[in-house]
Image (cartoon, rainbow, N blue to C red; front, side, top):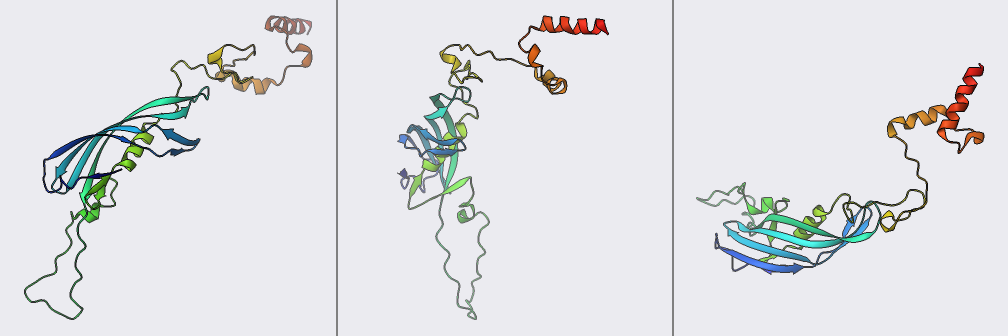
Amino acid sequence: MSIDVRGLLGSPGDQRELELVVPVAPFEAPDGPVGFEPARVRLVFTATPGGILARATVDSQADVACSRCLTRFAETLHGELEHMFAVRSAPAPEGPPRGSHTRGKVPLEPEENDIDAGEDSPETSPIIDGHIDIRPLVADVLSLSLSMKPLCRPDCKGLCPVCGRNLNEGKCTCAVEVIDPRLAGLGSMLGPVPDSQAGEPADKLKEKDQRGRSKT
């Protein structure tokens, strides 16, 4: 979306407020593309001696998958941006032909703070033909606002690790054995339980073990 800012250039201190709806291209995430609703952008431009300072708030929604139950839902996103758009300086004229001399004039070295020097900086973008494009900035703000592990709701129960049922929709009949992770290593040391003892309650197994010890 190209915005005409020629009326602000050359008038440091002047401001312009805009409210825009900006289409946002899908974000290529590791798990696949993430689609966004058109962003609502409240924008304030402030003219400076070197260009235009843009400040904005950005609101949108993203179509994401819950990190626990994998259900897709709309995640509400909010972000802010502050970015400098610089006037692109005119190209320097070519110097005199080699071997010629210009009396009374010394070639000027380029200014350290010349706008072109910062054109490729991530903190500044160029103003091209008096216009500004804010779409890349809006897309960056929204992609950074995405949750690392989105949840469809704070108390999401996730999926059953046995049958895969969504536990938010109801309980399943699967028996899930919860092992204390601090004792998980003991299972590999003791080895598998004999088939003859599989499924027996722990108190009966303990009683059999005590009988075996008393016989010895």
